[in-house]
Amino acid sequence: MKKTIKKTVIPVGPVHPLQEEMEFFQLTVDGETVTDIDMRISYNHRGIEKISESLQFDQVPLLVSRICGICSASHPLAYVQAVEEIAGVTVPDRARYVRTIIAEFERIHSHILWLGLAGHFIGYDTVFMWAWKYREPVLDMLEAITGNRNNYGNLLIGGCRDDIPDELIPKIFKDLDDIEKKMDMLTKAIIDDPILHARLKGVGVLTKEAAIKYAVTGPTARGSDIDIDVRHDDPYAAYSDIDWNVCVAPEGDVFAKAVVRLLEVFEAIKIIRQALRKLPKGPVKSEVKEIPPGEGTGRAEAPRGETFHYVRSDGGNRPVRHKARAPSYVNVPSFKASCIGQKIADVTITLAAVDPCYSCTERVAVVDKRTNEVICDYDMLLRLSREKTERIRKSF
Amino acid sequence: MNSEELRNKLSEIKDKLTKTEEPIDNRIYLYCESENSYAVNKFLFEEVPLRFVIATGIDSDDCFEIIYHYSYDETGCVVNLKAFIRDRENPEIESIAPFLPAAEWIEREMHDLLGIEFKNHPDMRRLILADDWPEGVYPLRKEVKQ
Picture 1 (cartoon, rainbow over the protein chains, first blue to last red):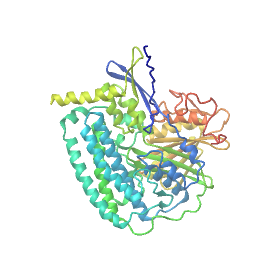
Picture 2 (cartoon, one colour):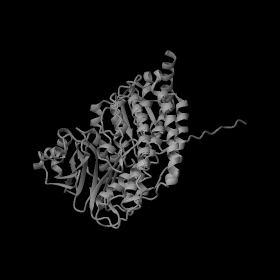
Picture 3 (cartoon, each protein chain N blue to C red):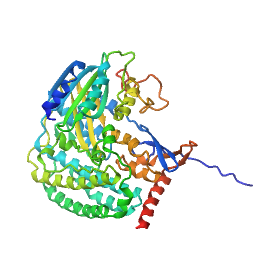
């Protein structure tokens, strides 16, 4: 007797079980050129702002550090600064430096993570493997300082939970030397590679005018010749005591954004070294009793751009309103300006260039303008992107 | 512009404002009624010009508030414009998205979560709430408990 085989279809996405940040992009194309892009977000809305209204002020840092696993220092930092503004708290000097060191380690690991993924998208898997290997010691350092590789949970209103033990400092210096050497090698390999120049220059250009209209921040803005960085413009933690540079590139293409991130890794190493040398003695916590009625804004420069928090207090022990804005919220809509007119093969890397986390590019659909049919999925986009790199490589 | 020049520039629009405050250094709060919000926002974004950061919608006891947060990056000043919507039954305000695409998403978000109507918004589809979320239930309003 003939057996019938039953097929089961399991739909995966847009809520993918392995990844954070569910987003869905629908590209409309004419031939190979993108003519429109539609974005849908909030497949995993967690209601953090509403939850925050039911927590006490000192519980909220742990909640907001879970907004993003990668930026888990920036969100609590912006929040505690907003509350410190309401209460007029002065943070101990040592805590300001510890905050700076953690925030810069976070920037290093996030930028290296992005570099690996960008390499993967264009078919440079060696870059992916190197970058992620070199990222490990950075996470180990964060674990040694805070006890966690991610979700550090080290920020309190009025200071930090844990201090950096003095005996750990020589090891941090040694590890920074190692990281710097490896990143130097990797950066030279990337910046001097003529194939990468051919592949990424002039691709996904976000003009300065569009960047201002979409109010983008972070490396997305600095790669489009906009000289903004909260660490420099509205200094917090210990940034005003430290000598460092804002990295800006004028071209606005994917290559410019990559250069900005690579240079920022070296600036971050420079900042950590200075902060460790200048690390003042003393406590890392100050006593905060009550949060008076009032309102405050706090912001921090996360690896992806400005993280902004607004907090309002009525004198009780919970915020009556807490608004959190992550940098991707303004960076992602700029795809409307950078993707339209591009070839499909360039879309994957253009979307990845604002560093909106891995999952965003996972759910891209391409629709034919004439028939309204979905003609291309993520795997095919990735293949097209890598094939284009291969063609350029062969022509050299 | 330095801080003083910024204050002078902002005073050009003072006839559309009800109050101006600077509780601490580098944090300015401007107050206006909802009907003047479009003109003041346009002035802040195009004339000063400031960088749009985000907007916060708040369900206050007797009205809705929208705080438009702007940043002046030369001095690191945060300029917050508070617009008050007094009609709680039919809260509506002019959309600023036609001249400021960066505000498109946050206005859709406030429409979803607080039920505020934005007049002349180019694309008022749902952004945050699921397609099968019931009409007329706005999760960020105070009457909605967890």
